[in-house]
Length: 406
Image 1: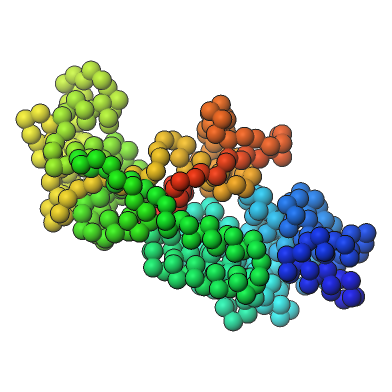
Image 2 (image 1 turned 180 degrees about the vertical axis):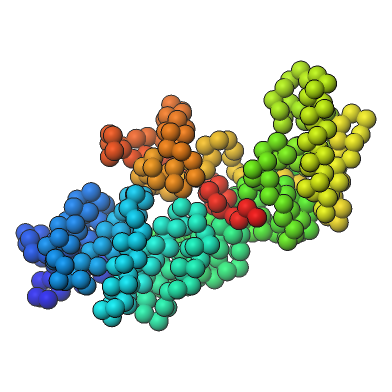
């Protein structure tokens, strides 16, 4: 490695992309192409960055496996920043294996961190946790340790484990301070701010109350019967009953919990669960069937009793019943939450993260664009979608697969 390449690499490690480019901007040899690609990524020109990294990988050739693997890892990080999930994760896994075989453990850990962050964005939390557990903390640089802390904090937050999330953020802040990378310190500060702003709403007969993440955790641990509209289920403490795939039963449970300790008229339940404003006997018969199904599912934690006019929810051991709702609701809530991270998303990446078809995502984006809530950049396959950051509350509970459904 010549002196200019070494100086450029040191500048990139310190976050000085312009300083790195000053030394190698006119060079076309493979190491310089790779460093130029990384510098362009730090400056935000991801398209040019990927082009340079691919050129570098081709120029290194098959006989320089270590250098090629490093280029693959760098390109995977650029793809992550572009929210491009179209590539196979096997290439990144192979690069990580090659780096470990050559003794480059730090870049191997970088590859695993990229894979972890990709899994988090796609909502595959169990796989992300397993990948985090495979990291060797002893070989992480301060910058990588900060990213690992941020990933661990996000994983804990999306499972509402507040104590571990705070501890992980403290580790991330300490590592970012040692790394002296302003972007990492800013990311840690944004994550810490999520604890202080509203994350959800508690809705009951007494009205509506905003809750922070700490407040959400306290409510779920309180022993109250909670109809959770964030992860679509009903629970008391550790007992959980998922209604994610039972929308009618969930609508009934929510209406009954919101009215607790009072009851809900049959006509109101029919309108909310079935959408009929002028019900007849067939609708009332269907309501009786669905209430029977709800009773069977909730038999260990609550009863649903008939009244003269409708039905009332009666928690068994719980002190009270309430609804936990996200800060805002609607069919596009999770979509807006994903876009609010400020990164440009493709429709294919959004479809993967939401578990929906690409056509469904395109229709939702068109509706949001008509409302002025999102905007498109580029055209055709290069088109990406952006939304302004949401202020005043955290989107943790709106992200898809934010909590386990069972």
